[in-house]
Image: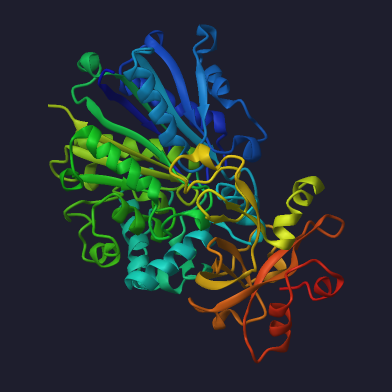
Length: 389
Length: 161
């Protein structure tokens, strides 16, 4: 296996993109990443596309060749593969692209992630999102994805004394960072009182505890580290790429307040990179729901189990803190176009590690972590990225 | 959802039929073909036998849902809980016959057969288990707790959340 680097990045604006089609946003992000990598399409080996639900959202399956086609590459008959893993689809696609280059089978690949959630009514989008949980034994009995995370939240509060205010701070932070990101779905700051006063979705979670349904696309170009300097002055090495899975339903987990798949993926990733959580300078963590981020911080080893609430409230994960997270605004403010999320997380880390994150920049960041979940954590993907000097 | 897709799960959804690994004794709901707890999974193949849950258990977490799952629009706000059954498995289900404010972690409940949802006015009606508090002062709860969970006309009559 050879070392793999991120050579180029691309991303559309996230949000309610009424005037733009799925293929438009997919191609915009992909072409941006190719230009950024100074890569001729003649050198491209293939495309991996993370997408959760094009069939139910757009009545269009078989979308990988569609994007390849409209990117002008159909005549070269390149391989194009769609990858699906619920909310983790983008990160899973990145893992597949990483393996493809690391193995030597391909030299250069584009990994894209794209989702268009606003072409269906909100209620329909919610049902599709719920289908990332166990439909037969959770959703049929009245559970929704936010309701399942609310069950995790209530249990976390019961066991560890986590407070409603501590959950709310995750959303306040996300919007603070989103206000500094021109691509973000939401660029408005919100207050603790607004989060606490918002209408309930599934108690204790309210509207502002839940990431929105967004449209958006993101892409990266991967290639061998050994030739990376031909394409960029700041190659970003993929120091670890790990996927782990767990039971489909929350009710079958060994622990209700921990995502075992994240614990496993993080453990494998830190071993692969020979690093520890203390070495990480900046992280993009799944904050689909405020509780999701707090559980993630514990599962990734950044804080002791049960302590994420108070540690987050202390500012440790905010700007200027020890490990700033979700400088992009996270899923809550940058947006949640499912298949694009995992790729967009890595795009933000690359900006940070290159020193191109503008007013969101974490000074001197050289090691970044991305974590992306499917459903209530049946799939978890962890990547570590490192600036090579 | 097609009729067959719901109908084939009837023994589980109506009667809480689970399975038990005769190799290690662990009980599962819904039934599984392979035991995740056995150190060597293959030892459990062909050794999983049907096992009837009583439906008795305890709420270990709950939420009051305001943004409903499809088909539950008429029931909001409703309580969804994780119930740890006395036999071991944890089930996800609604808690009914109680004000949402009256549900707590630790509340003792029992399974009860109810209407879950209907697919529009002319569509399939889904039935299955929900949970109700074991309140000794509540006659209806006590009657339901005394009887096994089963599909019958009287339970259909009171099949609302």
